[in-house]
Image (cartoon, rainbow over the protein chains, first blue to last red):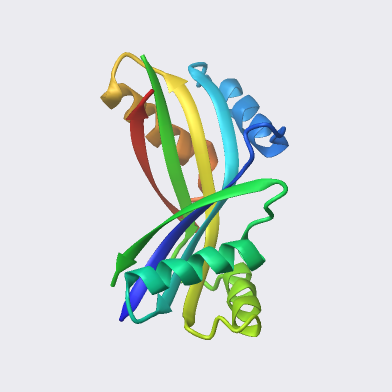
Length: 83
Length: 83
């Protein structure tokens, strides 16, 4: 079975996010004065095959821990969809 | 009213994604042999105030077009949540 994982990897809330600050500043300059906070992270779409949804989720969890996210600076969340 | 927009900005499907290719290669090397395709993009969490959900969506749409996404290389999608 084929699955698609949609993964968001974001900087921890406690950490400064200079890229987010720069984007907020840019938006405010462009007259988007109602924008109060911006955080910028990564989005990863991953296609994989697995015997079932749970196995796919376990694989994605491992991939996040071992390669995709840096647990010191980032948190991740994902959803699995059957293709 | 306060809203939160969760925005995904991804490289167009037709375009090569060297970062995605590198991540796929890394995962395959780490014995994630079932991973078939990886695309890497940006995830932006944006907090803003607006009179209603529709106005918030219109603002986020404009922000994506004017600053956040490069329409030549990237496509975007977003969801709006009331905070």
